[in-house]
Image (cartoon, rainbow, N blue to C red):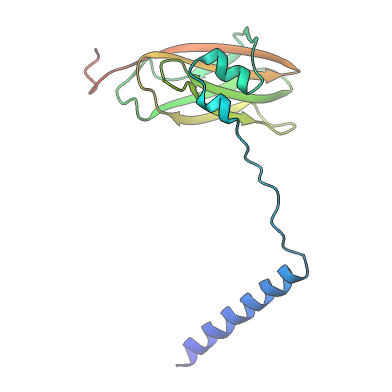
Length: 155
C-alpha cells in the first residue's frame, strides 16, 4: 500500500513542477525545425524537384561519393550512403530518378557538420540514385545506377 502512495506522490510532484514551469514561461513550445517544400516532394521529375528545394543547376562532381548496391533485391529498402569531400557543405538531397516522385530526402546541415548521410530509400524501379550537395554557395551532383529486381531474381 505504501509503495503505491509513494509512486502517486512522486508523480504528483513531477506534474506540479512541470505545471509551474509551463505557467512561468520556462517551458514553451519552440518553432518547428523540420520544414519541407510541398512542390519539391510532389514534383514528377528530378529537375523540378531540385528547383523546388533551390538546388537546380548542379555541376557534376566526383567529390560526392554514393554507396548503394548495384542490384537491389528489395526496392522497398535500398540502403544509400552519401558523403562529400567538400568544405562548407550546407545541404544534401537524395533523389531516385525511377520513382514517380523522385525526391526521397533533403537534409540541411548545420555549420561544421560532416557532409555524410546514411538512409534507406524506396525505389519503384531501376534508375539513378542522384546525390546533390550544396557547398560554398555552389551546387554539385553525382549519380549511380541501381538496378531493382523483382523478387530478387536478378532480372
